[in-house]
Length: 122
Image (cartoon, rainbow, N blue to C red; front, side, top):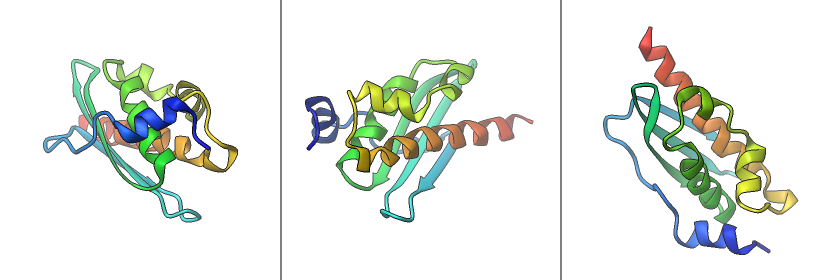
């Protein structure tokens, strides 16, 4: 059901965990499937120095969170805000149609974490 890239990120997830002194935290969930994904960001000089995630969800949610952190780390806040659910799904070489919502969770959680960081800058 899942391609080798998705399976790799599911079996060997990158950047799992939390950042205790995170600059921003974003959490989203999908009521229809029960998946929850939380993203933590550490921003230094306008760049994402560290990105970690935690998820309670299926294999596609684990893989989406893992890939998202790889895509976002090192990017500027502006670049990271442009990461879309399609970017995550494409980087995973596709997700089954019934699992596409998992890539939405990852991108949405990142955007919420960055919005949280921005709100603390004011």
